[in-house]
Length: 125
Image (cartoon, rainbow, N blue to C red):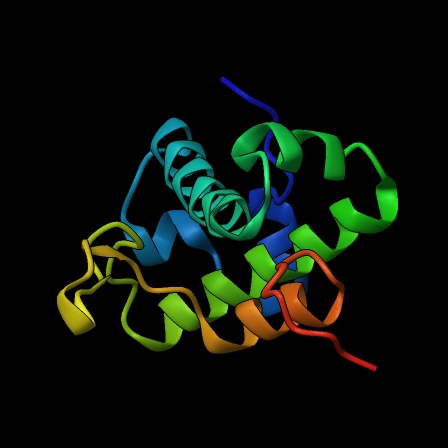
């Protein structure tokens, strides 16, 4: 398994949420759930990155960027908690005839956008 950027302990410390209790899952299953949330965020960044996931792998080598990704993951988990822990891959946005994709927490998107990790083609000052 890949490395988790946000652990069960991080979620407990940041959000005061016990994932095992809330999700009613065993520790290994909780880690898989966290990995799905992490992949949701990383794939969201890859959608905006020229070079896709390879670019994301290069971006997260820098601790500053990795901290932003961690913050976005925490925001995504908080968003899911607010919405009764509907699985990240079950909440889909299919607007405008686009392919279904996981919904990203608005604040997680803003955190990534404001840190410059989502290239939108726009010039921001």
